[in-house]
Image (cartoon, rainbow, N blue to C red; front, side, top):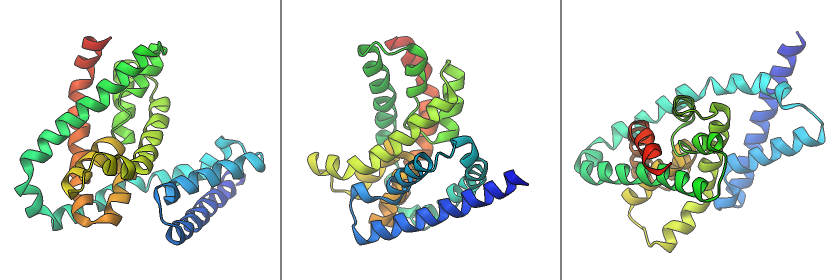
Length: 229
């Protein structure tokens, strides 16, 4: 009974904090005020101040995780609406995804090797650019820690969403296709949520890039480990 009550309170609290974070984001729009970033910081601060163990909070928060599947399926609707645009740009999308996937995996391996980071942590970091379930499976297969991989995926998602506007401006990337492919390959669903707010075309390109990137990363990760490590 206590577990059930704790779970309900966690869900209500998480939803309330997200709605509050969304209000703040709407009032002060910007890369550092995206709801997922503000909401995550607020939840961490609340757990720390109230001395609530993460395991207790997760009893309810894990129920929300079950909604991620339907939420991802909902991304199919803008794909349906932008199908003609995607077909016209299939070559740049495929080539961009391959380059993005190789860059994401190789950069993680090279940087962790140069920093002499423990190999188990490095292998957990390698699939950081794909969506969480795929990253955890890849980490398990190559000898990393799936739970740690999920944490790195979260950092990559939020980091990409926050930094992408500045990087696009610095690199003078203005076309919706370039932005969508970049955010889909580097920042998965968190970045795509932000891309959807910019334009449906950018969000659709990001959604396709995220799906294809998961496939490409699954194929290239082990060969790149053999090559770099």
